[in-house]
Length: 519
Image 1 (cartoon, rainbow, N blue to C red):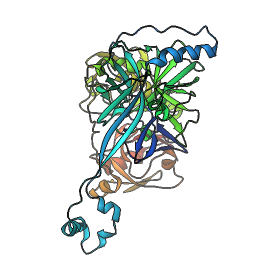
Image 2: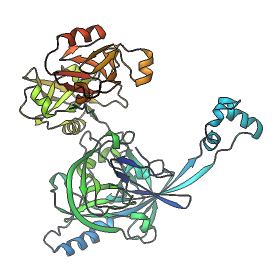
Image 3: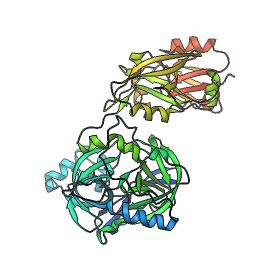
Image 4: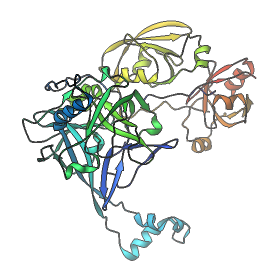
C-alpha cells in the first residue's frame, strides 16, 4: 500500500472560455460568471488559504436574531436584513489576442515545411505582422457590505484583472468600485465604493457552525441583479465542515481547504455573496459548486468568515497578506506507518522533508520526525498543521512536539514568513533489482525523461508488476534517498543497504515515504 506524501500546502473570472477541473467524474466550478462574445460562461472553484496573523475586523452592528421564529419567517427576516447589504458586482476587462496566433490557427504541420520553425517570419514577410486584437469581457459576481463607509467583501477571482468595477446596491444605486486589497491565495478581496451610511451585514462566528444547521445563501446568480437589484435568496443546511481539495483541484497560488459545504443553492454569479445563519450573521463567503454541468446539484462551498476576519484589516489597508511558514514537507500517517513507528493511531504528521534554511531546520526538526503537537494543540493531520502554522504570527516562537525514535521531544520554533516561491532542495540518482525495483545513478537523460532535479539518491527506472515495490506505490521516476533511515547517496549505498535489508523496509523518496513489504 502506498504511503503517499502530502505537501504543505488560480483562476480569474475573466477567462473567456470555460475552465473545468475534473475530480473523478465531478467538476468544481467557480460561482462567478463571465460574458464574452455574446455568450455567458459560468465558472466556479473552491478556496481556502491557510490564514496568517489575526487582524481586527471593522466594527459592525449586531444582527437581530430570528432563531425563535418559524423557519419561513426566519428566512424572510434574514433576507430583509442581511439581504440589503448584498451587492451585485460587474467587471469589465480587456483580453488581447497573443501574437503568434497564426501558428495556432494553421496548426503545427508547418513545422515540417521547408520554412520549418521560421513559418511565422515567412508569413510576416509576405503579409506583414498581425495586429493584436482586443476583446472586452464582462464578469458577474456578488459581494457583501461589511462597513457603512462603503467597504465590500468579495472573492478575489471576481475582481481579478478588472479594468472597471461597477457595484449595484440592493436599492438599485450604482457606484464605481475600487479594489482596496486582494489576496489570491485566500481568494478574498475588499473593494470600496464612495458612499456612506450603507446597510451593513454583521459578521458571525464560523467556528460555532454545526452540521445540519440552517443557513441562507444570498447573491446575484446569473447577473439577475443587473435587471432587478434585489438579490436571490436560497436556504439549506450545513452539509459538512472542513472540506478540502488537494493540489489537483487547486489553481496557481490558491489553496482550497477548510471549506463549509452546504446544500443551499449556489449558482454562477453567487461568488462573493454571503452565507448567513438564522441570526442574520455572515458565516461564510460563497465561492464554489461541485457539479457535472456547471449548475446547482446540491453541493456548494463557502469560505468560513473567521478566515476572512483574520486578514480583513490588512485587505482594507491594502497590505500584503503574510503567511506563517514552518519550512517542512509533510504527509499524513497511514495505519501501516503508525504501526511501523510504534504509534497508537494515525494522529500527527510525518516530516518528509525540510526546506533550507527554514524555521523547522533551524529549530532542530529532522526528516522522519512525527509532529504531534503545535503551539499547545494536538495535530490530527497535515491539514490541521498547515492551518495552524499559516495562522500563526510571523516571528512568534511556538512549542512543537515531535516523536523521534519513539521518544517525545519538545522544540521551540520561530515561525517564519512563507516565501513567494519555495524551491525544494534538489537531489542525485542509479542499475539493480530489489523487491521489484530497477534503479540506477541519475544521468542528464534521466533528468529530462523523468523531470527530476536530483543530487543524491538513485532514480527508479522501472518497477516490476505485482512486486512489493509496486504494491507500495513506488513508480518510475521516483528518487530514493533513504532506506530504513539510512542515507542513499548513490548506487553503491543502495546496494549495501538492500543486501542487508530484512523484513519490511521504510523507503523514502522525494515524493514521500513508502513501506515496502518483505518478500
